[in-house]
Length: 214
Length: 200
Image (tube, rainbow over all chains, first blue to last red; front, side):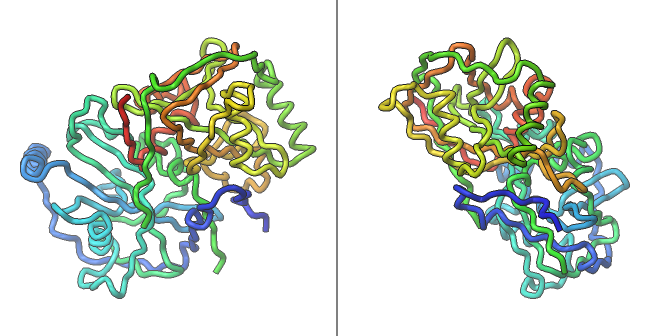
């Protein structure tokens, strides 16, 4: 079988860290759980809530997981779809004082695992941060650099690569669909997925994705 | 988990620039370039090229050094590796060829950092992808972009036929029209770094 992602690693000492093993979609089990109580607020209410949180706690930080599986010999990204056209990565807002890793594990449990899991059965391996996006205001678009005005941004979103074991049970709240979307469909498809998700193939390009045959 | 890597950037004014003899492009048109690429592929197999992201700061915002050919076309310093050549050594060779003075005692000590992006060319065409597309088992080129850490002072000698520009990240971001898909996505690929912007 031709090695599709073969590259010479000469001169590159961080070769091992950059290898990501991914497993076939078929090695994972998917089922659902009841939807979490939804916030169900108007856009105006949400804007007020975000503003008052900013006044109390400062910049809002969100952490999101980039999780890959293999299908048709091509890496696919796990995305949550809600309301038919909103695509999100598993993740969410950090609580004040919470570390990135703790917050991401908490969100992964809530979005992709059973609720009463004590994190010892479902171990999430959070690898490195692959990209950061900042918003100077809550309604503006995200950018991959700090605002050059020097003002503190209102929101920061950090993407973390999460490595899966060879099998896992995914339990998804009923109000979401869990999709596996091929990288070639995400690439440059900002209209459907937004800048952050459509930019993920470029953020992952430096990794050597090893599609493990089980 | 790896802690966010740091890049020290110094003001553009802490560097000095001179000129040297022109370095002409080997091909005069895109068609010529692709034809030459095909010839090389027949002889040597997949081309591996390496390019350098050299960062400076201006007004507290990171800028990338680009070489401009003619009036519009911009590229990163770098180029094709020789068959079997080590990536880091090859990149240093290309950097010295494009940006260092010719005298042996004025060679910058190039500090090659992390690889931040890899692009694949599936066919003898201009389009490249940040992954090897499905069903492509014999890509024609693999291009790797590396961050290069500059020290506080350097002397660069730029070939007379090229201009060296310092372009801010906000100008590159999303600007595919002007800079192409590879350079315009560098801001996202640098977003995980912490920039330590040191003033003069």
